[in-house]
Length: 243
Image (tube, rainbow, N blue to C red; front, top):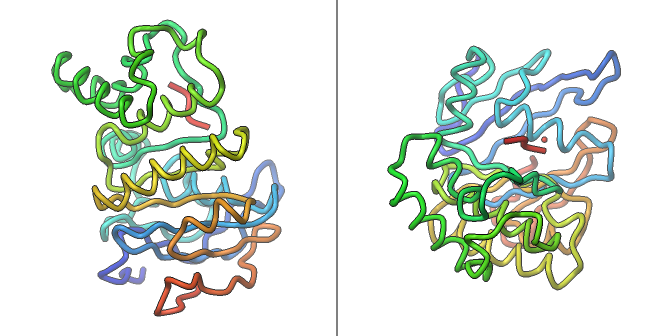
């Protein structure tokens, strides 16, 4: 077992994973620095979601290592990985997957409520994030009355509300119109910069990838050639949540 670099908040080496015998990842390695926004690019079916799910502890790789802050995620049991996802990670997928029975603010506050934050404090923090996303006026309503873009903004508030160490964003703009996608990405990247949140952003869209500091590409579950992002002076080479 090789210790990860000190400046990488996330580090994975030689990941292999198969779905029902079909290879999804084959020898993928990646490192993500603290506070960095990394875009994982590639066409649909290239292994992006599987990589994010392995990095976030949702999946245990068949082979390889995943480290978070020098802690080996790949050796953790299911309960420890669940705690890690609840306490340190945020997730937003292509579909909002909000809980219909809860109000908008309760959906946004869910990570805080599950962690035991007092009701009033959780509501206050959730509404603050909803306001930043221009959806605060709907805080007391149910998700059924929201449009797709509005619901996805609630999902982003849920991912950010606990100010996690890492947000995993799996094609978060795939179902949005261009203007709606731009607003969501602006909020995500601004929050990441101001709160020093690391973001791993999976996307097949060049415009979306352009918001990242650096990118790494996958093709058929393997590393593919991808030039460094212009802001990456070092030029280093480099998974939907149900609640």
